[in-house]
Length: 229
Ligand code: SF4
Image (cartoon, protein in one colour):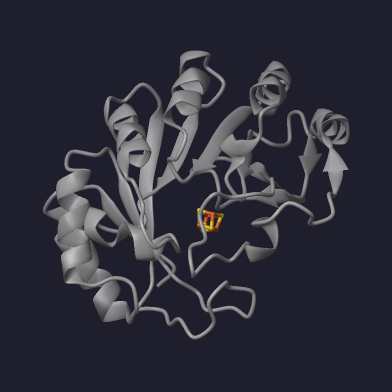
């Protein structure tokens, strides 16, 4: 497998763990606020292959607790289960970031004990999903299946939303809250404008808006936190 990025150590990406973060390219969404736009198409030069990654991880045994797998959308990678087997065999915990498009693969990874923590994006309320993932139309069925799977609690997880001034409002968080009601935990992450985002001109919400949105979400998910403000 080709790995397109490696952050050798992070204290932020895997809650409570010292981890590294591995980036894969390719994504089926085109979220206008995406920070990893260089990873969305296939063709970005790879950094290393899986043998080189495993060699790096062998040297980090006893130093790192876990490995974060992100993208792009990592579940597009056909060989991911095999790589996760090898990472788990080295004794690392695995956190997976996903946009929720591939519930069957996610269920299989959970069933086989290949992931320990899942962070799933909830891009917006169901009514506003298409524009928030950069599509004219969007069938939410697969994402709904992934939400239902995580709500069953077979693996530790969080839902999270990157909040963008032009894409979210109070109604967004009533809609999301009703959808994921009873979730274990939910985070609102403040969008950070950067030159590399897909659609220039998007803004971060105000701090007051972030806290008001979190209050709305707590009606439905008491364990709602805010990141980035
Ligand atoms: S934000 Fe995530 S889901 Fe959206 S386009 Fe970027 S990598 Fe894909």
